Length: 311
Ligand SMILES: Nc1ncnc2c1ncn2[C@@H]1O[C@H](COP(=O)(O)OP(=O)(O)OP(=O)(O)O)[C@@H](O)[C@H]1O
Image (cartoon, rainbow, N blue to C red; front, side, top):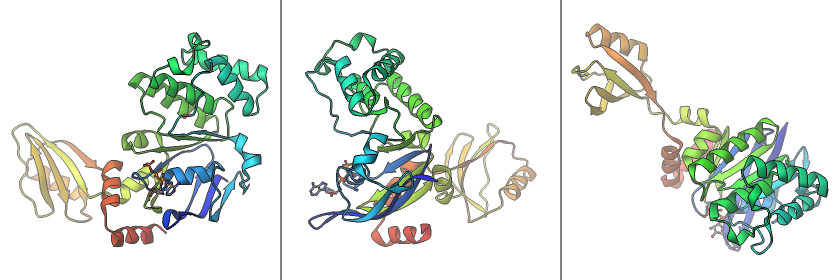
C-alpha cells in the first residue's frame, strides 16, 4: 500500500496555477525525489501535503485514508527550505521542547535527543544558542528536530544546502537508515546528482504540471540515446561504420551513437572481425541533469507528448 497518494491536486493563486492537476503515489519506505525548476510549484505542493494550505481541488490520501492535518501532522516531519528555529533559545531546551510538541514525553525526548546529539557530535552544543551556530550546524540541528520522533513521512526541502561533504555524508547515511527502518522520505531539491544517488523514485514538475514520474533507472532507460563509450587498444582507431556515428574521440576512447535499435553484439563482432582490440564497451545513459534540462527547456507540445506517453 502507498504511504501517500496525491490525486488531481490543484492550487491556484489568483490566476497563477501553482499546482495544476498533479497526481502521484509514494511507496512506504521509499526515498522519493520531488524535482522542478524555480517556481515549478514544489513548495506549494509540500505545503498542501503538510496541511499548511488546503488544496483548491483534489485529494491527499495518507496511510490509506483522507489526510486530516490535525490528526496526521504528528506523523509527518517537515524540514522547510526556510529554516525555523528560535535563534535566542538554548539548543538543548529547544530540541526537547520541539520533540514534546511532536508527541514525545520529556523522558523519551531526552533519551532520543541525547542519542542523536551523540551520533552527530553535538553534545557540546546543549547550552549554546542557535544564533551562535554556523549555517551548516543549524542545518544539522534542524534535521535532528525533523526526524527525532521518527515520523512515518519525512519531508526534506534542500537538506544538504550549506553542508560540507562530511556532514552531507552523515545526513545522507541517516536518510538511508530512516528509510530502512520504514520511514518514507520526500526529498525536494534542484541538485540532480544527489537525487541520482539517493532517490528510488522521482516526480519532475514544471509550471505546476507533472512532466515525469518513475524509478530513476527506468527513466534513464526511457531517455537513453543509444550512446556508447568504446575503448580500443592504444593507437587503434575506430573505422567509420554505417551502423554508428562517432560523436567524440579522445586518444583511444570513442563516444559513438548507434543508428536506432542496433544489435550491440553484432557491432562488437564486426569490430573484432576487423582486428580492433576492444578494451571497454559501455552504454552511456543520460544523467538526470540532462533529462531535467531537456524536459524543462522543451516547448509545451513536446512536454505534452511526454505526458501522454507516461499516462
Ligand atoms: N503566496 C503566493 N501568492 C501568489 N503566487 C505565489 C505565492 N506563492 C507562490 N506563488 C507562485 O506559485 C508558483 C509556484 O511557487 P512555489 O513556491 O510553489 O515554487 P517552487 O517550485 O517551490 O520554487 P523554488 O524552487 O524557487 O522554491 C510560482 O509561480 C510562484 O510565483
